[in-house]
Length: 482
Image (cartoon, rainbow, N blue to C red; front, top):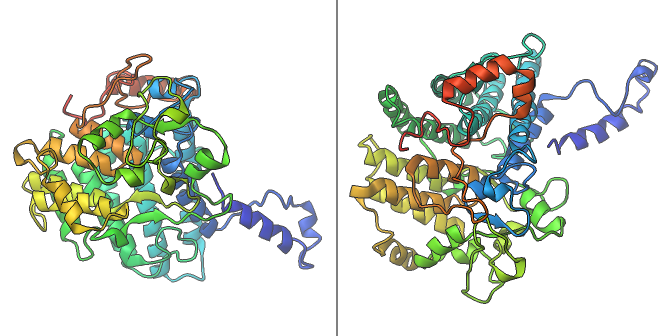
């Protein structure tokens, strides 16, 4: 979704009215500019990926369903994991390759050609692009498994790219994100076009290190990759900039109050005028059992003050009878989360539990994660947070650290649902519901788009065979706890 391109087109129309080269411009279509600057391409790609992460639209993704944060009121295919009718895998595949990765690749080319930028400025911009590309590639792998990588983004040369081994892609991404850190240190990168940090390069470096930590921990259980995972994780933690250290470091998109630059949540929950979603009983029941103070932020009080009742996951639900999503998520300016301090704290807790070198102990990082999530939700009373953490069902359990970290990590990812799905697959916690309508198991991956089966058949068949079958229940290579 290239929202910021609209601005460029409007500007280009006015520029097209100038006298210079007016006769040459008679042969140009002002509504279809042939060249878009790297600034607009960068902003567009960042927003497109952010929109994809944030959107609850079932035509776009089902992250808030597969992570069981929301369920539906009427249309039951998606919360029952029937993804073919709307071809959800195709949307994520095409938007990520076309609107994110390809745009960023074009931006790289334009930057390299710029004569008015110093090499340091070029390197810093290329570093920002690398961070977003690594993020997008990880997202593709964590969704599908093996995907086109080395031969992708080269459509003029290769129309049917081969699929690369997912673990090999991860190894390369770890190399790329480490190189990106060096590029970010070179100089000033994108500033005005940067809708995440507004050109704050120190925060970009923390983002890169935090993403490296995520990549490393994701493969920490994979045979033959454990040593590499520990080395990469400890490198990210001990680097000069370090990882995110507070909510002030969060990588978020600053959405605006007016269309078309609003958070997609507002578009589907408010602007559409529809009543398609209610909070799922999976998360509502767990948070009710823990008397979790974040309920007042995550959920609306439409059933009465302090009353929260989640809709039956995957079943028919009447909108008026169940708890709605909280008012904060209906604000058009609600930030879209790429990565936050709560996630980083739980990653550090996992690293410490694995005896990696970390700034503190697993329990301290675990409690930092809960506190960061609480603070982000507007809960700042230290006594209330301490009382919550002291509960037997919340207190860190070193003997069952996967369950402890998994459940609280998942709760904290409520507004970053793609990561919530990844957390559940990685830790096998908490226990999810089976959808009432079909009892289909929760997907471990998306199946490949139908277009790949039709247009890239031989490579699709090879990939399907390599991963163990193109099925929703085929576990990803890093999902080792099956």
